[in-house]
Length: 407
Image 1 (cartoon, rainbow, N blue to C red):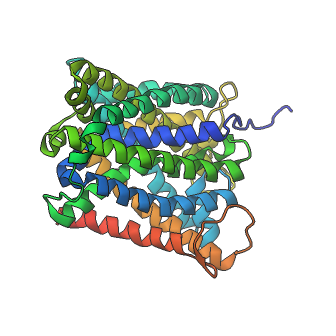
Image 2: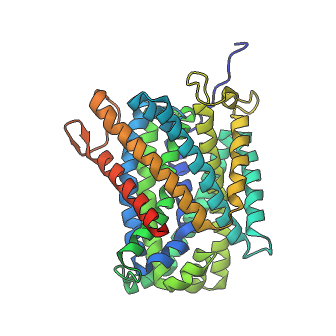
Image 3: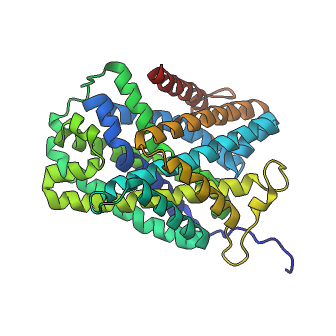
């Protein structure tokens, strides 16, 4: 009809949504942060992955239930607003997620720059900034093209991780999983760092308006993506620590390429570095997609919170063009910080604050609006969601770990 506002295209099914989450989680975690985490905790890196997976699962279940209740692109904003009827609190949640999105994108882009430096004598910051610009253009071009590219890239990064698992399987028995040279604090510091590995599950909800049967598909995709990646993380962690000294791993700018070279020779190292480039580029693309969709969603006129011009859909590409441009531009200053660990830590800190609000929102909704027939997080006592309570408490605990490291 003439004059009708164009809508986002619903081209995403369960496979695409799950691959989207798996691709985002794998690219951010293993390829970008595993070296920093190994340097913090040694052989107990495996424990750090398990702890981070457990904490992520608590909050992931909250997102799954809330996405079933409210299948909209603006996710966190709506969850908090519906629960607390507070415009300011919901705007705080949205700003937190937007900040996390652009900071996390910068961190992964810097990891891309680190791996690229193994091939080209180019500044990691310059290559990271270039990647953000290119992937912003892909994001603008359309969700169907972006998700197809994501499927191909995710296949490559999963292959790379399976290669690491294969070449390192013989060294698993040598790993001392209780080896913690920096004590319990080192384990928790590594847990905080590798929690960055699980940021993807929260971003899946931002595809709700481009997903078929979103109330069923999004919760399933969240659970599947966390499960698949958790298994891979543990196995890759065992291989990495088994093949390379934890201190050497912690000092490397291309840690998994180093692991592959140690297990299967220099050619394998080069192959893994190439796959890491694909993986981190893929993650940058997905983060740009999810963050721009969130900005699009919270800018709708019905909320009156953000400039409505950001919710306009490009009539030809059917994507939120201005939101895409703003997110890409906001990412670039964080790229200039230059250090993956620092930028990832900032991203985690902001994200954990949002997780506190999201888990609190589910606890409130369970009390005030318990009649929900869609997906429900397991383990309840009456109207109390035990997993949401654990997600809230564990998120606060990780923030305290981060704060203690700066004191």
